[in-house]
Each structure stands twice: as structure tokens, then as C-alpha cells.
Amino acid sequence: MLVLFPSIILAITALVLIILYRFRPGFRYAWLIAVTGAALAWIVLLISHTVIPISFTLFTWRPAELFPSPISFIADQHAWIYSLCLAGLAIAVLLTTAVHEYFPNSLWWAGMLWVTGIGILAVSAANPLTLILIWTLIDFIEFGIFTQSSSGSLPNRKIVIAFLVRTAGTLSLLWAGIASLSQGIRLDFSSLTGQAAVFWVIAVGLRLCSFFFQLPVAADSAVQNGFSSTLRLVSAASGLILLARLPMDISSSPVAPLLLILAALVALYCGWKWFRSSDGLAGTSYWILGLSALAGSAAMRGNPFGATAWGSMMILSGGALFLNSVRNNWTDRALLINCWGLGTLPFSLGAVVWLSTIWFQITLPLLIISQALLVAGYIIKTMNPAGKTSDQALPAWTRMLYPAGLGFLICLQIILGIWGWEGAMQFGLIPAGLSAGILTIGITFTASRLERFNLIPVVWIKTMSAWCKGFAQGFSGLYRFLDRLNLTVTEVLEGDGGVMWTLLFLVLFVSLMTQGRP
Image (cartoon, rainbow, N blue to C red; front, side, top):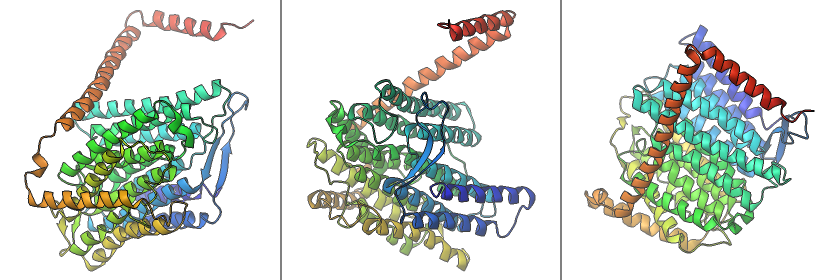
């Protein structure tokens, strides 16, 4: 039951905030209640480290012969780190909201806590069936939120297409489970073979591809910094946890080298797009996809701890950058501490990412270049004052809370680099870390001195962009086909012969259900 406590605490806190918003609008202690709930959930997660791994079964399906996988959750090292990062992100969002105009609106805090609680459940799922159910819940929540915050037909079409892409990823994971059951293999993370795990990688890839569509967010920049960034990072973490569950023999699959090369190309493309983006919020999708591709490459090399490290840095470093909306030199410099982990230097959170006994030499230079582009873009966007408000007009108490929220994420990344899991206190692979560091410094200094550096045309970037557009157009065509099919079926059923068609479908359904019975 301890596995569910953090999510329960966050859900209860969100419910209290909603009730206060409905019956006591403007309640002065609503923010304090939200911070207390998030901090309590984080403390419970920290204490649970003493008893992991632990598991809890919520309920089992009946009959068990047909549905052998119960709805269960587990708190192991991978789930614990992701949960701790998500809860820490919630605390940072609440502490940094004090500087924004929408500070009295507790409804956004409730939604953020609710989404964080669901994300913790997703990373704690003990089997694919539980994860599929939570994925579906997250998809519907995202669909509703983005639909409400968009206007016009084009954004709505993007939302529907992104929903279809995520659904395709969920169906891929479901297909992998059905294929395993047909071979007599239990639908569980621990009993998966390397061949079936390829479908898991495809499932994660499809769900993450939805970030290419750049879904619309609320016009309020504060909402973009807080709630929208949290929603995207939670959605990404719920998919990346699957990479940490891949078996060690996945590299034996004949398509593993192809998937690794694809991950390296995606990381390189997203690293370049992130580097060229105007600010952190504009490049959020490329940051998530770039770090996710690096996590996928680590998992395909048989390094699940490396995949977890990349995913955790995506949340902690990215969350700190996206929340950094106030111009303060000391805060900006403090955020550069995260480059120690992003640079995969010794005794950092990222030191474990290159530790692997399996190497595909052709992808290593691409991965290091991708890493350097991501880190260089992180440095440039951190030090860029554009779009940030001055902290001089803020009250004294907000000037204290704001850096505390960002500092909490920085300290958490430092702590996870030296304590808490098997990936801590690692010396790392020095040649890879030094190569990425030198390349990062070179790219950063070159970009700061050549204004036209970001405008250099690159042929392969245009090719990758064409592939991405083709991918999006394919799903757009599927969307238009389903839309026309829906209109046709609606016209048939609502026409003069609608009753006849309904009865015909009913008879057909009954005949199919009774087929084969004595």
C-alpha cells in the first residue's frame, strides 16, 4: 500500500483545492495546502527508499486463467527515481508560481498535482496491462486539456492526430502482450524476451512521436511554464519507464542495430532543433525527444540505468529551465550546475549513461554530438535574458521562494548522482564525457560569436524534416479518412434506413457472439 501513498496524498490535496476553489474562492492558505501536500508526497517517497523494492496488487481479474495479470504496482529503483523527480518537479512548480499573476488560482495547482499523481502511478506500474490503462487515462486527460486550450480547426486536428499516434503506441504494447500470451509467456516485465521487447520500443517511440506535433498550450506564459511543462514531462516519463524494463538481451534482436541507429538520428535531429530554437518553451518538444532518444539508445545497449538517468535529467534539468522565467544572474548561473550531469561527468547523475558492455561504434559519434548540441542549447537558453521578467518589482518573499524552487531541482539532481540507486557514485566513461564536454564548449563559444551560426543550412536536417512531415501527413490522411468514415456512418444510421441498418448490425453481432456454441 505504501506504493500508492504518494499518489493518494496528491489526489486528496487536489480534491481539497478544488473544493476550496468552488466554495471558498480566494482562500489565502490554498497555496500552502498545495505545497504541504506535494512536500508530504515527496517525503513519503524519500522514506520508501528504505524498503524498496516493494509491490502492491490493487485487484485481480476474474477468471484468473483468462486474465493472469492483475492491476499491480511496484516501487523499485527505476520507479522510485522517476517518482521522486516528478514529485520534486511539482514542488518546484508550486514554489515558482509565486512570481506569476495567476498565483491566486488554485485550480491549476490541483490539476498539476492530479497529473503528477497519475504520472507516479504510471512509472510504478508492475506489468504492461496496468501501464496500458494508465497510458489511456493520461491520453484522455491530455486530449481534454489541449482541446480546451486550443482554438481553430488546425490545432484541433493536431490534437486528434497526436491522440491517434499515442493510441497506436498503446496498441503496439498491447500487441506485444498478446503475442507473449500466445506463446505461453506471462504478461510481465520480468518474463519478456528480447524479440518481443522490440514492440515495447516501438510503443515508446510512437507515444513520444506525438511531441512532434507541437500541441497548443494556454496563452498565459505562467501556465506554459508550470502546468503545461509538467503535463508534457509526466507524459514523457510515463513512456520512458518502459525503457528501464527492457531485458538485457534486447541487443540480440536482429532489428536492435537498426533501432539504435534510428534513435541516434532522432537525437541528432532534435539536438539541432533544440539548439536553434528561440527559447526553452519553444523547444520543449525537441528537448524531451532528444533526451528520450538518448535514453532509448542506452536501453538498446543493455543499460537500463543509463536510460533512467537520461529520463531523470530530462525532468530535473528541463523542469528547472522551463520554470526559469525571472531574470536573475545568480539563478541563471546556478542552473549551469545541471551541465555536470548532462555532460555525463564523473559522480553525476549522467555518469552511468555510457557504461555498457555492448557497443555499436557507428552510433557513438552521433550520440556524443547530439548530447553536445542538447547541452549547448541548454546553456544558451539559460543565459538568454529574452522573455524573462525582472525580479526587482517582485516582493521580497517571492524573491526567496522562486530560487528555492529551482534550487530544489538542482540539489535533487546532485543528490541522485551520489546516492540512492545503483547508478550513483559512478566514475563513468571519461573519453565520452570529455569529448562531449569539449564539443559543447566549442559549439557554445562558436554560437556566441557567430550570429549566423544558427542559420547554416544542413542537408540532412532538411531530409529529417521531410521525413517528419511525411510521418505527420500520413497520420493526417488517416485522420481525414476516419473523419469521412464517421460522417458516412452517421448519415447512414441517422437516415431513413437507420433502424434497418441498426437491426442488421445487431443480428450480425449476435451471430458472431454465438458462433461456435453447441
